[in-house]
Image (tube, rainbow, N blue to C red; front, side, top):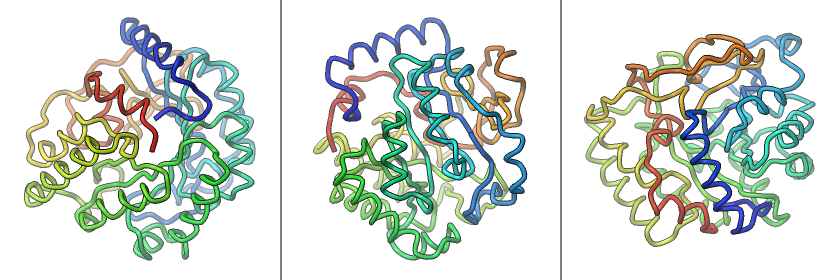
Length: 325
């Protein structure tokens, strides 16, 4: 869905930019990993092991890289991006250097306050996305932050009351939260925000415990069907494309075998300004030395960033963009 910063007349401009970037074979989305520091303790990630003095190696601006790629979507992520005290300045610089760019901030939400959200919205954030894998204290335990889920819900309610852009939950589908997928969706809708789903992978640190497999395919097919029915009834709450939701059961059954196009339609820039095709791949070169990527024979994940990069532009996707939660 469009943020309050845009109007319907911006939609054809976004579509024109989409066509331009596609024809020029430039990435549609650039993810700025502004820090690898994090104060959570997630079992599927080891960024929390990054020493605090790593901040001295983090570049001071991503504006030049943003101007070079001029993406349609820019995401500020980490680590936990709000640990950067200059985050507002980083975002404002990208906003000032890229025309027609939808900016998203990914956060675990533990350090977010209404006042910080106001400052980030003013700096240029269109969408706030908070990680949420369970509705209860299991989420607090998984992130290692006591009281986190309750804090997220309080903050989100205050942000929605203040009309601070689009608010989403980022929910990773795991084998131990399949019973939470539809309740999270219903809760998001009740708060006037939305959800973006992604499939868990053990690619980052080898933790296979939450990994989905063929044994979960039937349950995932039912969940996929339910999510698609919800989307047909109410556009704007689920931000995933219909295509991505359709492919989830196929992926866990081992039927998605096409080469991954990461680095082509999406790419990542790390805190030192180095480019990598995927968040879990090593860096390849500085952004100034960028060389176009080719598809890679990898099926280790089905993150939304991978699956959405492969999604065709259907009319349903346009409906998603213009709908309101």
